[in-house]
Length: 41
Image 1 (cartoon, rainbow, N blue to C red):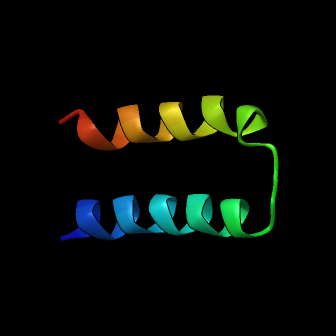
Image 2: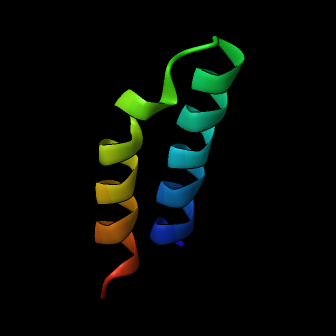
Image 3: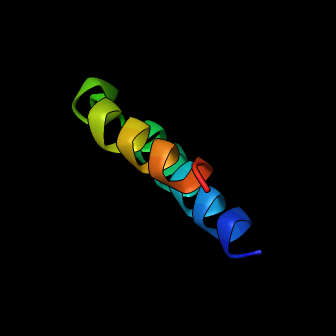
C-alpha cells in the first residue's frame, strides 16, 4: 500500500506541474529516479 501511495504522490506532483505550466524537462531526472527507486524491491 505504501508503494501505491508513493506512486500516487509522484503522479500528483506531475499533474500539478503540468497544470502550472512548468517545464517538465527539469523534473524528468527526479521523477525517473524516484520511480526507479519505488519500483525496485
